[in-house]
Image (cartoon, rainbow, N blue to C red; front, side, top):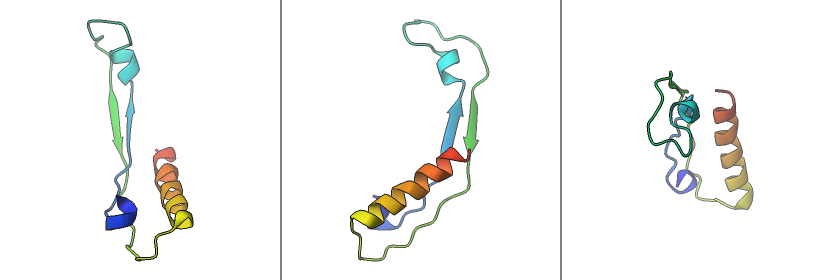
Length: 68
């Protein structure tokens, strides 16, 4: 979608959600859940999207998420 539209991507990290609602537990635990929102990553629609462009775009998105 990003490659086709040039839409900005806002990286988001959610921490503590597994501790708050572990698998197999019917009732959530009251523990802190933190949501970290990063700066938008901007992309330009070039019209020449190919496999290398898709890989570069997904790499930039993953790097932005990884820095959170």
